[in-house]
Image 1 (tube, protein in one colour):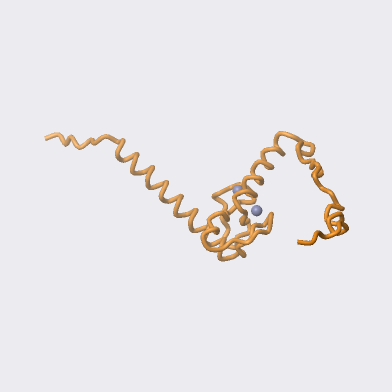
Image 2 (tube, rainbow, N blue to C red):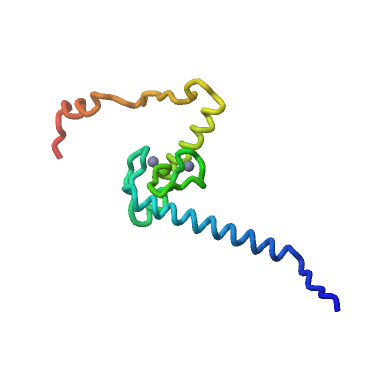
Length: 129
Ligand SMILES: [Zn+2]
Ligand SMILES: [Zn+2]
């Protein structure tokens, strides 16, 4: 008469994990949707505009890097494109590692730049066809 109803807990665990994941995905989806309602669809860094299919490239960044901090007024959110979002996080990491300015920020002037190239062409006598 002993009730041997002990099913492996693995099933239950899997179910809990699946539920938690679904929960998180649902929450992420809603805060993204909420952020998209509050803010214009523009990357806060590079100021590119997004619409239609490309809207997927626009992501929600958490200013304090805490994804659980989602105040209803959106004050912890920033809309960033994938590229700038990546940048934002690597910048954050860099700041933890370095105190000074990050190396590799210098830009070489393009060596092929010839300011008078167009002028030269204008001064050349035109060939008759
Ligand atoms: Zn951007
Ligand atoms: Zn972020």
